[in-house]
Image 1 (tube, rainbow, N blue to C red):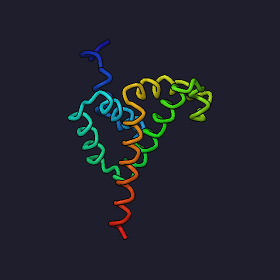
Image 2 (cartoon, rainbow, N blue to C red):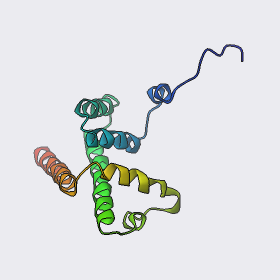
Image 3 (cartoon, rainbow, N blue to C red):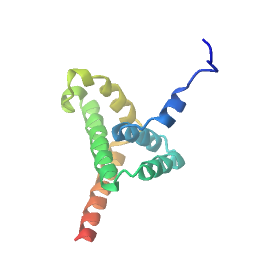
Length: 129
């Protein structure tokens, strides 16, 4: 093809496209689970740079961690993860993603993260009033 110089990588596409916050939260929890602190902080900085409201970040992160917590519980009790998370047929691919991410955390760690996020929300609301 004339004018073709090379191929475009996924990384280059990601740099040019704005990801949905849910997708970015998946990246964040991957970094957290892998104990990649610098990467986790950079992801948060990028969200703030893109002017995503901190409350929106906290809500989406809380909901995601809650799903990981329920996934972990379901796996430990031999329950169907898809049913526990109330996933639709076109969302079945999420079972593997949630299971993989949940395996990087203990149940206690997920519970502690949820509590910290609740505390952050509570303290934020106290300061607003």
